[in-house]
Length: 259
Image (cartoon, rainbow, N blue to C red; front, side):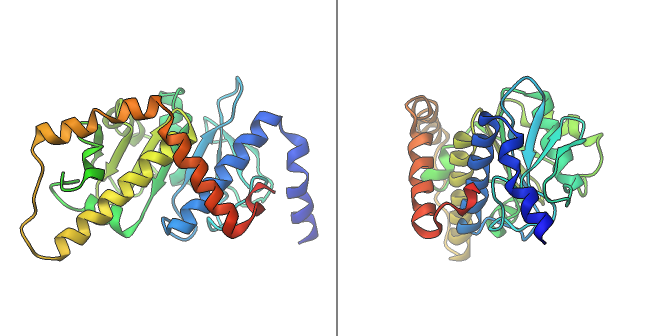
């Protein structure tokens, strides 16, 4: 146990200041996901590209729950799945590597990839109609949401090309019969998209459970809402959202995640 703790303590000294900042931010995202109950025990993954010339990214060790993760416990891997730094010795989930590395390799400008298996996300992913335009939250994704058909547990490297092709230039994707995925040029952006996609799915299941006929917005109305999102992003709405979420996290848990 002492050796494990010492290994974590030494991580900050082994990495650049930019990487340490990325580690702290990603660890905060994991803790926030735990607070939002977006977790699936030790499964699902958030990843963030390490700043610098190397194609390395950070991901969770396979065995820690989201509320345990700290900046020091994150695993650094290269684009081919080789572990560069693993302070925990737990390694990574192969399915996480297949999904995340596919996107990081194909679109290096997308620094963050977030993937969840929530009840709401899986529930909507199993519906033939997908995400319905029944809420303002859902309308944010009109024309901006991709779908990827289920091919089994994501262990087949051959699936990567199809997953990337389906994602295209969309900021979010529903993995059918599986869960949700969002991406962004920054962690703040990907988290912003995930927050609203998760809320959209939860609202859809709640509305459907009432049994009444659903009111689905006209395409023109949904498009009007969706067209606001790039401007909001340019004005930094995702940064405000993230900063407020981190303040809330720290009021409840302090900064343990930053260790």
